[in-house]
Length: 361
Image 1 (cartoon, one colour):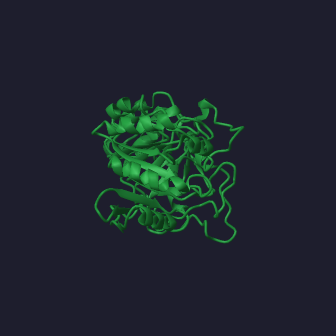
Image 2 (tube, rainbow, N blue to C red):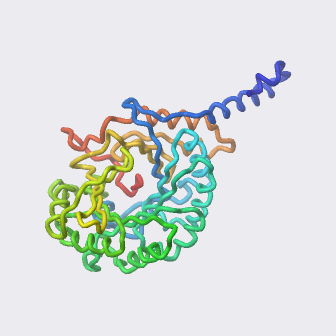
Image 3 (cartoon, rainbow, N blue to C red):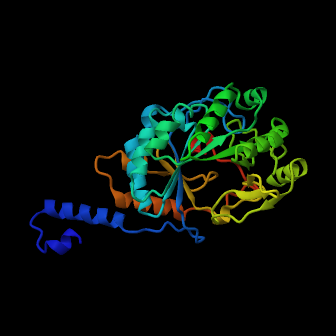
């Protein structure tokens, strides 16, 4: 009940102000469904904790002269937890920490611990390039992390260096092995194929994942690279990869999606040994069932990777007393403004001003 119900006579303006604040907080705590104009209910969120990365992948970042956010402009862990506390009351129950490379942010396990302690957070995952994971996975798992996606685009150090413009494949493999040693972490591998760089690695990557009973998912190259060098000719479609895998390894059969909003279409090999997934964001977009929102490292809400609008929640989180109703209103405005699709195939499409690492993968 609000103060108006429990105190029929408010004796001062101070009491009136306090009552108004309580009423606004309670309004923010009521169950809210984040449904857009097309009937999509939003239940998941990608949270970028930093735009900093320790490699420079061709499909994501420029090779040189990268300007990162000042550390003071990034949301603090406490501010992220405060935001998620409100968002989870609006039905957002699945969260994925991204970057940049999220493990470059010091003491990430402290954020994981704060988020996993929230009653309404049902799933907490991490996407990483894996280079710093071996040293951190024990702390992250103890803090409550249960799912990890690691990028693995090649098993060749030379190709890794060409693709990421850095060395360190051995560290990625160490991160994968460290996760495999744990029974409490669900691990998936992500691979992005550039026709002129690592198409020849696809079969070896699938065999690597099958040998370890891991699922690998192939993600189509999207026009979100920092160098603006994307071209349809460099992209390898999921259909081409499915045909390649079936021809070189063996027949694959589609599986039912575990959820309509799942980005990956998964297949199993006809002999039952292993699974492979395909995220065909360009050739077969899944926008019609997308249920994701995104929070950038500096506190901007986005409703699509390719969106051009952002909603600032940092200003609402950096005040002394957080106005939950105001954050709910911002979440609703962001959701309502979402377009039917990302529009890559539409005439006149142009990529967003921000690259993938600046938005959060």
